[in-house]
Amino acid sequence: MNTIIIGGYIQGDLKLSTGSSGKEYCSFTVYNKTGSGNYANANYFNCVCFGASAKNLCTYKKKGDYIY
Image (cartoon, rainbow, N blue to C red; front, side):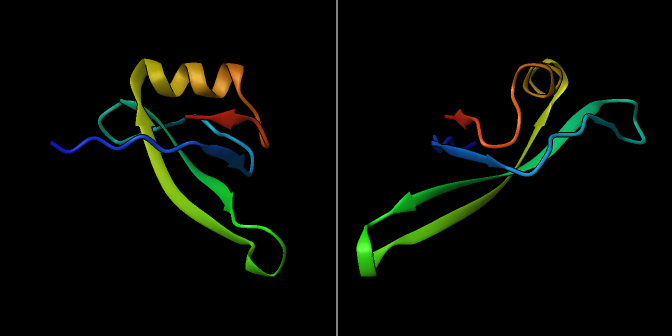
């Protein structure tokens, strides 16, 4: 399995959901800004976390918070 680390801001509200197997998950988008002025750009990453990580994310973080 490959691992990457993404740092950015949470876009949209977080919602804890339960899958058909009963496992909790949270789908969210992280964005970060690169460049400045005329060269400004934003990168968006769709993410999913499961179990205790999903529950903690939805409990302690909100739209606009920085995560990594």
